[in-house]
Length: 307
Image 1: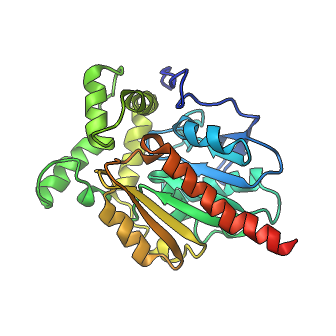
Image 2: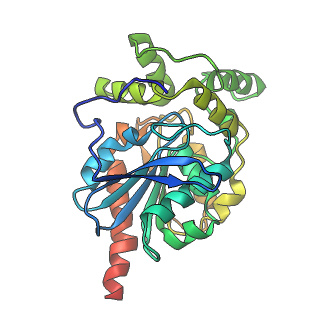
Image 3: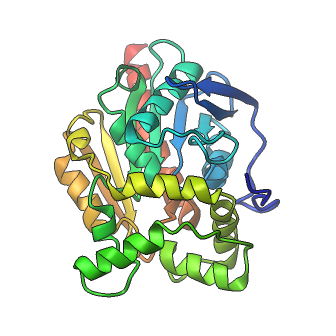
């Protein structure tokens, strides 16, 4: 795996976990899991996106861990989770189930937040027993359920076969990303972030994305290209909030609106003006605030009623 490290200081430097463990998925894949915050606090589970890692959630972890138990894990092949030959939405669902079973007590419910491929992970797991046993509410952030390549606006031209072909070639490239250079930062900012993103945000994202091994990046790009989870959205029956940036080129707002229309229990749709695909880094306060709101409404309120 790449030796490139996340930023070492500032709001996007990954905080040290209280505890680390390894969850073992259905096919034996080993997943690196971090636990932050007080042991008996309300739980929030974080599933990151394609080419990212637990470091992506640094701002959310730092804020929430004061009074929440935050569980973050590296998707297989990302961060400190070893790569696996199995790349599929079923594998993503297996992995999330394994993390929930390894970190939550029987009957314990959590808010589960997924960004990009992490949101697709949540959708893929929507009908799984462990997910239904542990999910109190969900946040789907900057994500979609199908037609990702055709919907993407990374290539600035009209929708159609030519744009789809070019987008597929770009997102599915096998080329190494190389070091984080000024040009690399500009390219990443254009494709994944809003135009007003601050340099420290771009640097944090670039270090995370460039650390993803190219074989892993390519393998999961094929899964995203063929993604069809429309049926799984209809199985996501827990209260679900949807959030997207208006400048998201990878999963544009139309994708988020389609999710809202298909979800059985959509509790709210939030559009963040000028924010791109990397909303948890670009707009950390708003994303964290939405997680807190879900915990207050769907975990703390239920606990108080049961007391």
